[in-house]
Length: 193
Image (cartoon, rainbow, N blue to C red; front, top):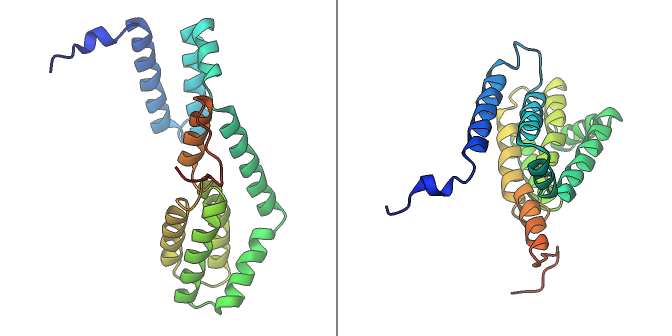
């Protein structure tokens, strides 16, 4: 209780700029459909505006702290996912999944659960889920009536599987990048503590 929070604020002008831009960004999220903008565009516009308002010195410091390795990792994964969708690999996977399970809802749910759990341990779970969403939608187009258990299987499998390895979840990658910058690199096959 002895802590005086006002002493911790070393740049009150910057704080007010950040609060104002945050408020505008949140309003933009609420209005993005009316403005015909994607939510990512609103987020990037808010980040860009804040960088402009903070000045050149603070902008250089902010850009130096960005986890560029992690960002380019995700860029590559999302490009790969889009390529799989465009080439029809996802539709083919959905077709094979239905053939394998015979369209049975329980068998399809178990297939997706275990496939997503195992794959999410070695692929980042966010891009993997982004890859699987069109596959489940395609399964719905091919005659699977109740997709809700498939969605839950995907969510559960990807969430638990993401804890299986260093590259299984975004948080793991970010922590590994930050740890490496501090001089404590974490490898995929870490020896013990």
